[in-house]
Image (cartoon, rainbow, N blue to C red):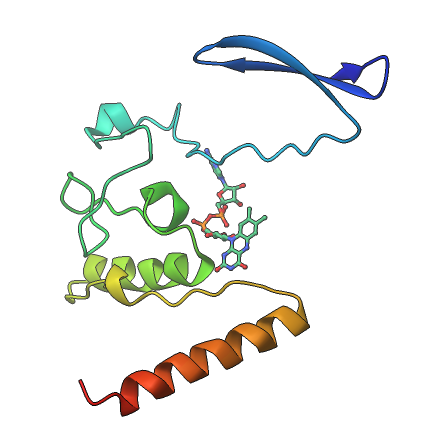
Length: 135
Ligand SMILES: Cc1cc2nc3c(=O)[nH]c(=O)nc-3n(C[C@H](O)[C@H](O)[C@H](O)COP(=O)(O)OP(=O)(O)OC[C@H]3O[C@@H](n4cnc5c(N)ncnc54)[C@H](O)[C@@H]3O)c2cc1C
C-alpha cells in the first residue's frame, strides 16, 4: 500500500499477475492459514495439508495417539467446534470413545437489529407456510 495521487494505491499480486488499484479506502481481509511449520510434525509422521492437519471424527491424526483440534484441522473454524474438538480429543486420549459430529454445528449470521427482525419474520412465515402446506 502506498499513497496515490488521489488516495491510496494498492499493489496486488495474484496468480494471474500483478496490478495496482487506487481507492479512497482499502480493506485488508486476508485469509487465515495454519501455523504448522517447524513443529516437527513431518518427523513424527503426522500428515499435513495446505488447509491444516487432517483428523478423523475422534480428532486423531494419521498417527495413532496424536490428536489435533480447532482451526488447525482445517474444518469448521468456530470457537465452539474447537472446544468440542478438545473435549473429544481428551476423552479419546484417555481411552474413552468420543466423536465430533460436524453435521450439527450451530452458527449464526450477525445483522443490524432492523434487518434481523425482518429476516426472522420472513423465516417464521416461511416455516409456518411449510408446516401448514397440504403437500
Ligand atoms: C476476527 C475473528 C472473528 C471470529 N468470530 C467468531 C465468532 O463470532 N464465533 C466463533 O465461534 N468463532 C469465531 N472466530 C473463530 C474462532 O476464533 C476460532 O475458531 C477459534 O479461536 C479456534 O480456536 P483454536 O484453539 O483452534 O485456535 P486459536 O484460538 O487461534 O488458538 C491457537 C493458539 O495457538 C497459538 N499458536 C499458534 N502457533 C503456535 C506455535 N507454533 N506454537 C505455540 N503456540 C502457537 C496461538 O498464538 C493461539 O494462542 C473468529 C475468528 C476471527 C479471527
